[in-house]
Image (cartoon, helix red, strand yellow):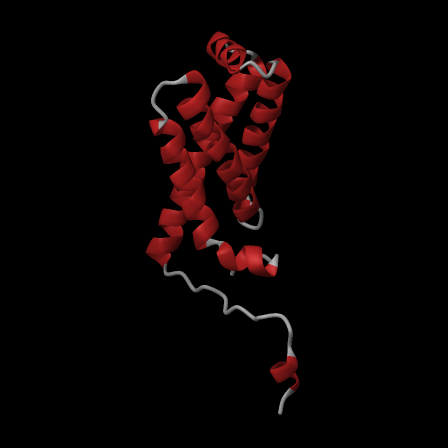
Length: 138
């Protein structure tokens, strides 16, 4: 028997992507990053619509800064392939909160947060091997 028979941690096989898949993945990451840089930047800059939205939520403006910071930092992470899955996970959690807030607190359509949630989930899923291994993409 080999030593790997008694290994307690599963080993995942690196996911090999063809050129089209890699280009599509990077395109989604760049598009998501642009959207979150804009959204997070407008929160941090104090755009009137964002101030009003966070007033309606009722938690306080400090939460606008936290959310904007998470969005901007995660957007930057999406642009770095080694950090992209971690940025996608942070954005997934943020968008779950946004969808929930739209549904139960402020009203309105949660369509945009749902689309952004699906995009972030897609990036996290495609790069799941990096999450499991905590390593750079190949």
